[in-house]
Amino acid sequence: VTIFGVNDVIHMGSYQRDAEQLLMAWASRAAAAGHTNPLIPSRFEFDENHAVMLMSPDHARNLDQDGHTKKSVREFISGAAKTPLKYMVASLPTSVDSLPANLKWIFEMDPETQISTVPDPDTIEIVVVGGPTGKSDWVRLSGAPTITKVIEEPA
Image (cartoon, rainbow, N blue to C red):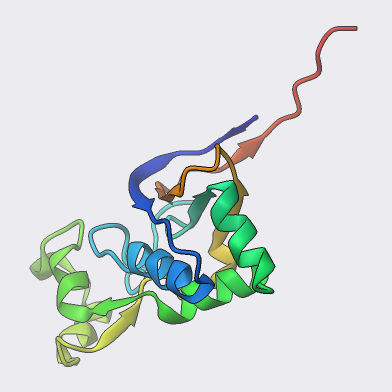
């Protein structure tokens, strides 16, 4: 059993067979602003920029058949999931005037600058779950630790 703190879930219903289209659909979910901001250092003990891909078996099968691995999926999403800086700033969990002085450099950047929403591919976990439905989810975590424990059935 794995328990993790969830900030939000973005659904992905896609019946695409093409792996590149599936990866772009995943990257578009990961690019959604409104969650934690990789530009702002986290105050949490655990990084709040982690996400879990709850991938349907058919999506996993299509990606596997086209030669993708969990590593290549993570790297693709990390490289392709970007959003304009202005959306990141608008999604800050605090008012912009309350940012500390060492973060004011953000406002010197062009608001259209594309910012990676997943700068580190190792912050993505991939779990294959569910049935053959073409329905998967991008789950953005809340910064709480993810805990996995094996549950043993009594003999």
